[in-house]
Image (tube, rainbow over all chains, first blue to last red; front, side, top):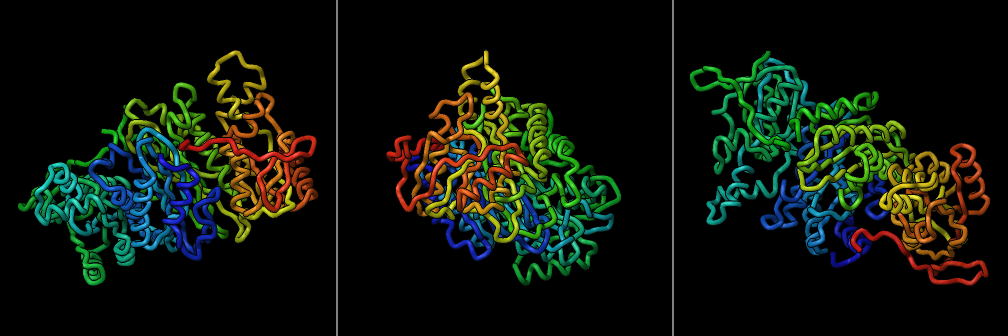
Length: 317
Length: 317
């Protein structure tokens, strides 16, 4: 590092200034202090680790910072919460300079500004690899949280946006140029995921019985809803909305799309939510299956069922 | 890792069970949800990084887990907050097994139980070194937070407990056995710091004008109070309470003691707080200097002043 720790913290504090009247003590004291809210408090933490989640030779520090905040925003959204305050525990390796670090915080600031939350605290440590650990708080009206465990037989399974773009983008970035317009869009989705912060409350208001964000792959995250809810599912893979640059396997198991996967109590509720999402956010909402009493199965176009084999991302596999 | 990610998360969830009626959604969903409090919300994050902050060949996973929580508890205490909820973003290297990981969470559970807070969420990632990033929330009555920036000329500088024990313990653990009783106590202070969670509100109630926890060394953290408050100080090094196993340099600049350094509005307020801390917690509170209009100086026993040279821990030095 080319400047001292205290100098760097002062510089970071300037990037993060203007955090609003509810921030009573911002970066620079032992802890941040914010005015308490009136609802329930949603808490999530996530780490991006160099080598595992990003590569400094492939991604800019602004993109890494943006993504670190975006993936935590997605977790808050998946509970139907509104994001409020972020903290960053940053581990830096010896070859990182102050410029890279400031750009990283610049990317975090872009994401917090875009989604109306504030980075209010953090910690710097030295290590052998860069790790960006983000904690995000959110607020939800008392009792209004949407868990993974509420899906009921007969519910319609829906997903926002398209899937497989992030996995395709990762593949295409590694392959290198030239890229088509669709391929560039996929790479952008990989670098800068779009958390469904606005869309989540719409699904909740329309009665979503369960919700999860698709971080580890559609089939894997769908199975998590089924296990938490004690139900089965009939998934129609042909209906899964696929990103224009993605292969079928990438749409079903790619991961990192940060779309919302939810169950709606009826086809009418799913259609109402789809209409509202199209009008307000121009976001697609697609029915892709039905919750069943038991059994994890896919349905093909002849109506025949097959075992659903969850594919996707096991962080320890 | 010898088991899958989902199996490990399930096992961790069992270690962390029994988190109380205010935990609406514990570990296992996209985010944790807790009932909101009535005061202001205190937020802190901190990371222990292998190689920098701990050595798996020197410390047990229980001690590492305990310490990770303890250092965050100390930050909440230094704001005069009461700890509430903890989150852990854990990065594991390939040579760590499930048993080590469960012991780590066991140590966290010991600390959260001892200080009446709850670990409600987390994240697992894979990396090349182990990093334990803890976020802790706390609550403080509206407006009751004690910052670093409130010290006024004439205030009495006080510190809890003794200093230098952790630095001595680190040195003595590396040196190896045999150890005296004092030396073993110092090693224990290094492995299991005692955050001053109960003591902090007593200092606040007795009018503490500023407060910080001694994490990076007494002189360094004292200078931080002076800079934040725009004041000077006259420190009497001879009055600094030194751990029985510590050298003078370790007491003034050792770091990691997690004692509270505060400024009190008068000698009477300092004495009242000292009496209460002695009665309730058997904790020492020692006046070690006076806040001045400007100048960072030490005073020797002849009354002569010398420039205060901050020594201590710069994470990037």
